[in-house]
Image 1: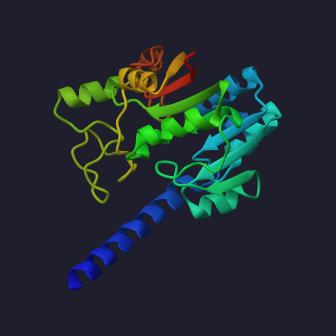
Image 2: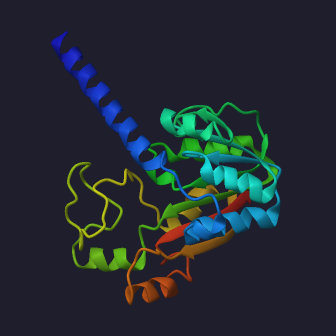
Amino acid sequence: MRKNKIMSQKCNSESATINEYYVDHYAKYLEDTKEFLDPRLKLVLDLFQNQKPTRILDIGCGNGKFASLLGKTTNARVTGIDVSEAAVALAGKRIEAYRVDVGGDVYPFDDGYFDSVFCGEVIEHLFDTDHLLDEINRVMADDGFCVLTTPNLAAWYNRISLALGYQPFYTEVSIHHNVGKLTKKGGLTSTGHIRGFTYRSLRELLKEHNFIIIKAFGIHDPHIPSPLSLIDRIASLHPSMGSDIVVKFKKAK
């Protein structure tokens, strides 16, 4: 009985920590005009604007501000889902939003309901990445498309870090201590990343789920100071070297 009580307390504590993490990282505000977006989100907005979808699912919508901007830019109906109740409460003021564990729950939508899906900086946080991709495949129309973004484990600076024996950036071995990094300046103590993707691994996993990539991009990190920012911009010309990976994909026929 005592062991079960201790385990219950531990689970409740871990659950509280997770909820706090998502509130802190995903319920924050961002500017709702394109001029204030980072390079990754500007590209995402362009990809959707060029395609002109009518129904968009934003997986991991956070406070819904980008989803709202996405809807205004494309004139589409945007629906958001997120694991954070606090984020969904904020998003619900702007878009239709639901609290969903995107890595475990069945999404509350009919098969093929959305003609497009956005999944930004989510897949690296999930234990069951296959469930995410299965649900995207299910709720996305056969002629639809998805734009997915994730940090690049094989970014040029992570290759250097590993070669020197340091922990790759935006990965961690502790939720409390930022250890093993080449530099700790500006680094988050915990990013919550439990999956690290290279462009190759992402491409092969998408293929396993019957998807094919239409376009792939490397994205530079605007926070990297000069003169390293120039190296980052050049490296980001290829998706396998950039700080972030952006892929647009569809179902294979």
